[in-house]
Image (cartoon, rainbow, N blue to C red; front, side, top):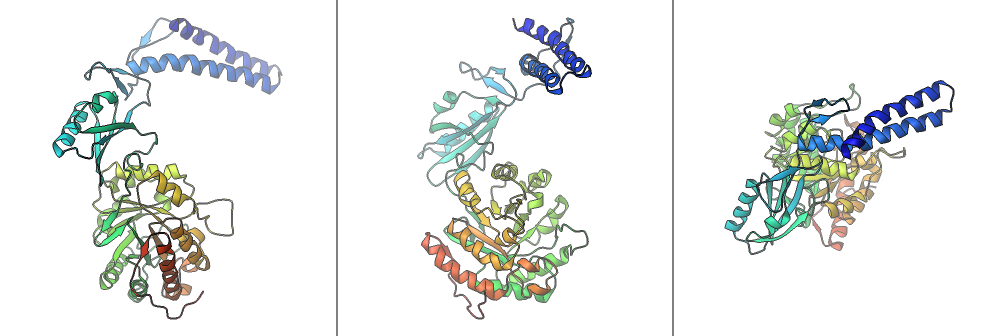
Length: 447
């Protein structure tokens, strides 16, 4: 019956398509001709895809009405393990892969966990382990779709769950506990709201050191600053490169601050890693998967900004590219998205913070400087971000923003930053968080 329908498709589809073209040439209304052509396409997809998918999935030859055969060009990367046998499988339609989480019993021993991992590897699976406070979770990915009951019966296994989200390692299903990224004595994602602050770009020794001293005095834990600037205009200041990194590292060390700076290309990783404690991936590179995969092998944390027009799912899938490479220290950063609104540079998506916190275990920081593009709005957005649960802030501060070589309009004066930090010390405890407890400098507050 299947062969008859397949032959029917080969004979009827071209006839319907030709009829549509003839009617249109003869002056028949375009909509009627298009309807016939569309019917042809629907029929072709229904019959041909059913048959070809089955043939491709099994790796068999594809028949045609002339009685000839040709080898299948593709082989599905998906298989189904027969529940009755762990060593036999049948190919299924492409797109069905094993994406499951094995939750180990809270009292499972290391020997039991290792035994389960070994069994999963024997079945052809890739296994990613996540050890939480109360239990260990194994994320299982592979071309063979395993029967969960084969795993449930193993010693130490509590449950086997299916991950519904397209992002797996970034999902809370895989890791229910919050991830805390540790950089020396700084913990991003813990109870304390971590503030990263500094100039948009390094310009001079004096400017970098003065700004670093100001943000340290106000309570920042991490110095932010750019040495490579992805500017929209090729005529704008592009950054000082390695000289800028040297300035930033010197200022950070002088103030006992950690350092974060943007990486734009794979070729820059080796250089930046010598100076910085955290890589920053800007909005323009959120879907630069070659760069993300390489950072997945890096030994330092990565702050991943949301793309200019990216959905939350796309953002999390980009984080997945880093996590899949083995780098578990990923920090997400909401920095606003492009909308039809022109009153601000971007539209700061404050709702994205609690949404992502619910979907993912990764820490989320907010960038109110990019979110508004105006220094007179940065404080309001920063306060709102902390109130809705952001784990940190990254803010542009300049000792003389009116004469900055880049992004002066959105850079705060040190006195404005002082006041903001004082205000955040009132907000954070109200939601069960803390922020730098050092005394804040209150001199020269301005709005």
